[in-house]
Length: 162
Image 1 (tube, rainbow, N blue to C red):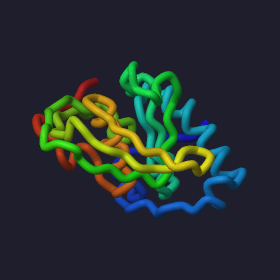
Image 2: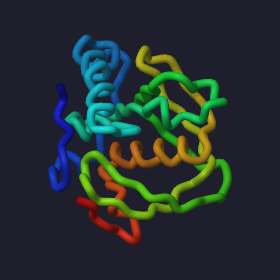
Image 3: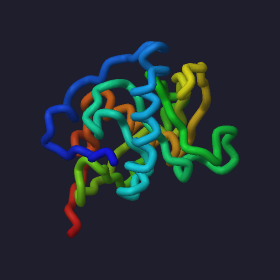
Image 4: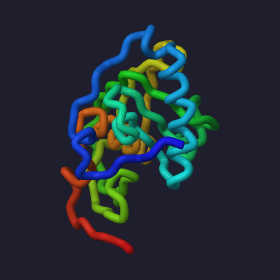
């Protein structure tokens, strides 16, 4: 089982590197993906980025519960390789966020409600899709991890729970 690292681990503050098809399709990377999914669920997460398990590569998992039910990607966990996103409207919203790498800390973060995402899937195939609301927020949170940004860097009204 993979261990999720927590702040202030320096690995969480590094920009992760893009990966190529050969690296993605290697047995080691495919094994990492396979191990990240249960690690995310074991800690009741809804997303997990590779830096959170001490691998500074541009790879993340979005849990199936974050994906809008009527989305064509619904029903399964989503693996995104080298993801990039752009806003498709200026509409934003505040929501309370937490993070497996910042345990017991929560705060309100302002995120775009509508985004367009480009990435590869686990097999290196191109993915392009729109994401809205909670799904869009989770993607933005996880991509922030790939850039060395934690939600607490953007949050207001931060609080701790026991």
